[in-house]
Image (cartoon, rainbow, N blue to C red):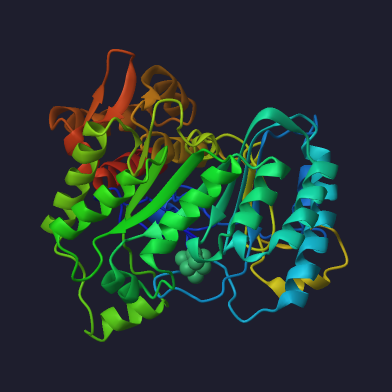
Length: 450
Ligand code: SF4
């Protein structure tokens, strides 16, 4: 649902998606799901073996992992937005929804083996999870409660398209335990919504927020997109002001990216639209930080802003390279250093004979990759990463010398600092050059002899 974080464009707050599929891959960063591997340093992917599911791989991990974050992917939308390359289908029907929810129940039952302790976070994204009406949501919630342990303080987020939010649905979600909604707002300008081919009215965002609050869901995140073709700095400021007027607890603000194969990218290649000027995009990024920080938000991640204590715990699990289980077509997971991605095929998902979906990508634990991921994701956070432990990790893979050598010029240029907590962090200037910073550090990790 939300913003559609992009590939490697990274500068100006752009999610540094590492993989080909930003939605279901890791750095990405857009609320929801992370990535498989960094940029052009992608390591060879080992093809899934055995029965082609992650089950056979995880079975060999001793002791059996117990994961405290879970992502569920709901691959349905009522319309395909023109910038979106997430796995979601618009030409589905109620029968598909019914089959999907039943199938998800089977997968959750199987995945329950690795979900034996109370979840810290549960994130249901898509797609448009709220396209499933109240009845199917009741069923899905029953499956979740049957197979997953929830704690009183589990952060349970559901992504919502404003056009599909109803008071009834919000009441069902709240009664089931959902305590956070992430609403795909993107922009309050009808003109720019049209450019994105987002099919909702700005007023429906206001109504969706009210419905959630009336149902008792107070923790509300809004997704916004900037650098939309034709958008001015003043219009972006107006979007931010309108979003703030709704008093969200969290805001995700991503620059628009043109994902290959999307209708928006086709229009760009045909010269029908143009990208935002780089300086304007940088100004929008800077304005976003200034305005939101002045409004009492913490800029805790490159593109994410939260009221105190309202950081997305689920996305922090991604950024901190922690473990999470993933269910549903195209979802990607990370457990015990193993990364995988489920096949992006609804029809196959509905008709496989095993409860586990087949997977398309599998990456086994690899120290250099783990350090690269740690850097790429952790440096997005304002808190940065413990410097000494990065050095130790670099030492362990024989890359300490090259890592320190790469850091030197970045520190001299004040793109990164080691702060008073001895954490390596991007500076304000470094945030604008994050893509370049990450590339240099990646090279030091993957090619220590260069
Ligand atoms: S609503 Fe659906 S098509 Fe639009 S951005 Fe979200 S996932 Fe993509």
